[in-house]
Length: 216
Image (cartoon, rainbow, N blue to C red; front, side):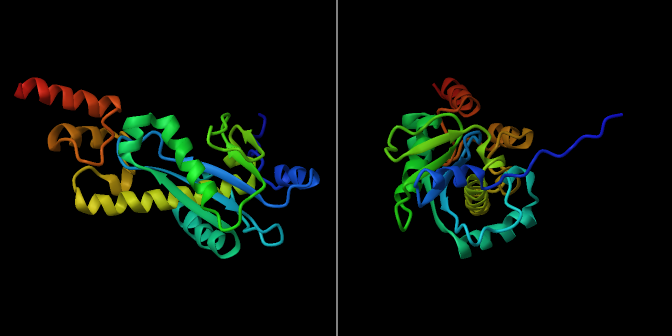
């Protein structure tokens, strides 16, 4: 029987390679919230201090909520961070991919000191980004800068959804963060579509279409 080894934790090797090319300020960029039926899409850009990198950084999905919260505070204490969003209206107008890229562009632009190189999670560079950059597939599990961005983006967006859940109870946003869980989809049918739902997303669009047919 072969023993399963845990995948390697993200490290600073992408950043080290960029430093070797002469780049000084390297930002990790990631987004969260492409899949939910409601709420904004949220992105973060993080420039870590190479001398003070929080221990335990990893893909936010692999961390417990308690660990994410602790790292969130540490990242803000030690790094240059900007979080930005694209709204539900922008998602419906542009499409979710372009909106998530817009949130990334805003996060990079909002950093206190401009970076000179970006490490971007995924395989596409947002078209509004003109800085030197490289895309890294599964970057949140490979680069600590992208891990840090994934953590702060997730915590921030989760908190937004908890706040919205107080205003629109019954959809379970405080636990499902707007993702299409069974209970969320059932609530959509029972309670209807809120102003925070993405009308361009199929489950929401279908309910609106059905309601329109019923009332017309």
